[in-house]
Image (cartoon, rainbow, N blue to C red; front, side, top):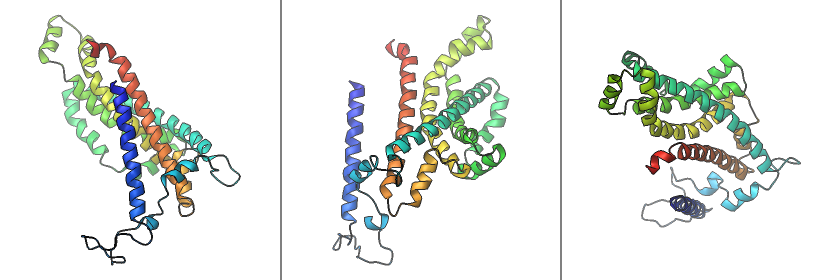
Length: 283
């Protein structure tokens, strides 16, 4: 029942966004339809609001119909091109997700057990996320050479941070009296980790995984741009961006495909979370 309400809410919001899109396109027609308005917007003011015709926004049905058209002259259908690109980008994203998740879990575990390491290294972990990914991506491509592995490393760069923070918070969340009780029974740090700390940290870790799932897709798409890879969604977006004036619906279709990959990855992690934490939630 709860899942049904969530799906219904999703489609209602999607419908409202579609209506807002078409209203904006209608309002910003050519010429500008709002001539006498309370905000004093003139037809051609020095700094006028852009019209929909200036932005070259396609209708929603034009974007949907573009999936069934050729991606290029005498080429495959756009939906086939985007499906292949989505699978390629998903491979890079899931590799980066696994690398970043492993690094985040390792750092979070070390920081939870070694306070000195936590105080000394955590500022650098935080500072790493202040550097724009667009500045780091070209350097990674040069160091590791262009290829999907280097793109996965860029994706991992965006995913390890939330996993590190949430793992540390989760491992430190158990009641101190529980930890003291385990130590009074001469339990090793390994036993305390797996029997107390890690089970308590699972909700925190899966929250980080859901954030990292979508971030890994973004990192993969960004990493494809300077690498010269044209088989993924980054290459498709770059290619269709060059023809935006004549065919804007293809670029928006590529953007929708990128969003769907991120949503599906998020739902995959959510499904795994439901299975792993099912017994805990029923207690």
